[in-house]
Image (cartoon, rainbow, N blue to C red):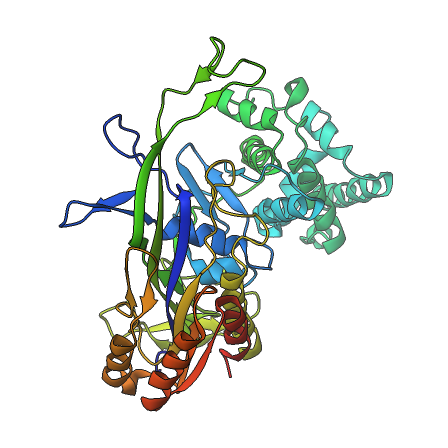
Length: 490
């Protein structure tokens, strides 16, 4: 399959900003930078930082973030449901399913809580011997079974009592023909699972020594006390499995799933109009100017001004296409009824087939359009980056883009720096269009020029692109980005 990619080069500007913090050292700047051959400081913004704001500009519901332990955080890893998982990738390392994990979102809507509980809910296969051993245990008069029965209505309690009486009658029958094994009905199985699943999100479940010796550990108690739905549910699930270990199957280890991002970019590196400085703050409210009660923050911070550029490559042919299996994009239980296709595994040296699923073409196209529009809307929701202090906009101030048939971008060298502001070098652009001519998917070249540019800039760029045999689409940056979003799949 021929690669279909959107190649871009963008330019942003920061005035007295500090987009990324670096190491704090008394004899150096505390923002991220690299030092050039000339000895000068060249600040940069990591791609991780930029992609955070870009991701937040998507209009779709974001994938929930899970925290596990102190130093692990990852998204749900469900690219069929969540657009950002598809576009920006993830890695969910294989682990035992009973390892507790926390939902990192500070607030949980009703839908989010329901989603969390649905992910950890008990399924029919967890019940041994079709649920009969658990049915028997649920009706025993002990603290935990008594409490679980309170999760059921009176009709449901009567239904499981009748089912248990029927099973006992079969066991005690004298006639062999009456001892024939009889499965529990679907209705009874649903009631048994309800008794468990209704208790998952209950932070009081482990109170009053209901679990006897299987009481929560100190860490588990802390997770319950946090009140976070994911934490409470994961602890309760493990406690229930341990308590009913003879009646229920233990969770099996989960396989690793990973997806490399379809949206790729390099760090934004300053290349023009660079100025650096150290700043400090004072607290001098309600005090005389330079009075004895004025407080000076002794920790100087670094700030900078400058133009930065980066290359971006959006692999359109990979959007909405997911390989199925261990260490691949999704696991088999995530296909959600999609049609399974097969092809030679591109990640293996062996000539073996691998399964994959694809979203409908319309959905894949809409996701490509959504990520381009999000680039035009960076900052619309959350405001500028580092909004608390020395904020600055990461919205592109200029760009050039085209659809390609290769997984590479040709536009790295077209922006030239200066002491004031950069410009698009038309001689270099002419050479790029000539050298890469056979690798363009179509003849459209999109260029967003600086808002404070001159009309002659637009005329000159359009002329160079036209003379090279391409169609120029040139204008103001956000206007052209939004046009690109509409036409990118055409």
